[in-house]
Length: 152
Image (cartoon, rainbow, N blue to C red; front, side, top):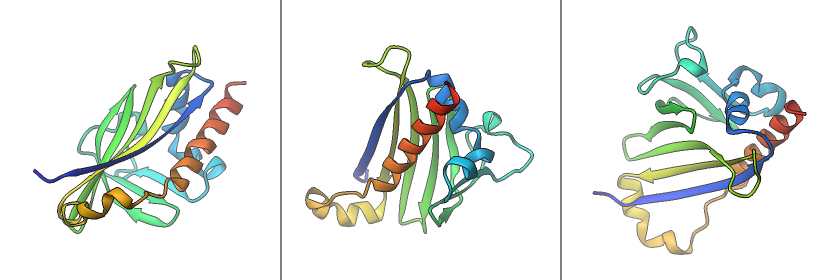
């Protein structure tokens, strides 16, 4: 089994997990609060709430486009899996958990588990490397702002 490189970032949001998930899954409104990020069902007739494991997506994160497949779409998590030429795979995750520090709030976590040949070959260098969390932190902050603005 190949090693897994896991990275994640969290933010506290002053709204319920259901409210955060509702804004997150409103893909059509991303252009209003998160320019540069596009998430769409590959099948335009499907709504985000109806996406099931195996359904395709069209995703562009600040110009980095790919076509992953939904792994999970539940009240607690939205996840997809993508591949880089079969040499590496990643499961990108968004988790909506009740906050342990802010009653009624949400701990929103965005992360990815990378695995495959590229990860195996690069594993000796992991310890000294940092993954650039800036774009994900920015997405999380923009989501927080949109959710909290919408819930007031």
